[in-house]
Length: 293
View (cartoon, rainbow, N blue to C red):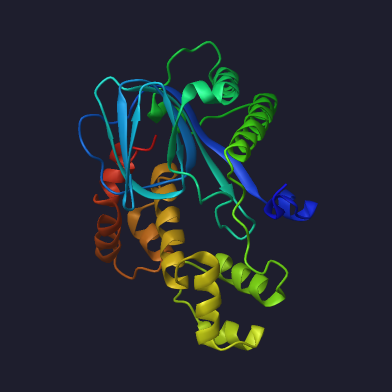
């Protein structure tokens, strides 16, 4: 078993994993390339039609009868008309907010090789949506009220599904992302500091440098090596994710969201959000940003 799979129980108990949607129906947008969108971890089974995914320098075609494993991050996507799929989106993170899986994803495989995962996904869909045969993406991500009993059933079904998902990845040679110097106390402090940093404030490296007894330059180096990006880029990703979530799930005024994310003037927030997503916050809130798969 890979070393990345052998970790203390406390670390596994601290991972954040929950389902964001499960739907079975036509693709949310067809015959047109999406804007650059931020997507969570996920998997979708193309039952008819075709999808094309552009992530970084990759372009992956996913024809009917194939399954795509989504890596968290940004991408563009295109779906052939009448593309039908079964899809699950999930949040899957280490305690400090870094993705549990990253390397090895953004891959397409024949669905015939994934029979157990496909059946587990069908079972999750049935538990969540009952006798319905088709649910759109918009319906899949919509927030709903549940009884404690229903919520518990959904959560139990998701955990059973997640076990099959993790086992499938393991069989394909994909393990959880290893952590750099996981036993280094100072690196743990840096991860916690960056994840907990208020989104309305600029990073203050001098403050944390005094706490961990490292130079700001060394902090930059450690965090970039651990995250694969600079601390500022990571904070921007946190800020964009929070903006997306609040726009979709809250009725909060745009100016309040802008202030909470560190923008003194709402037009600056709008320009920043458009630069990252290709659309205004208002358009995204109205549903045009709901293009994930």
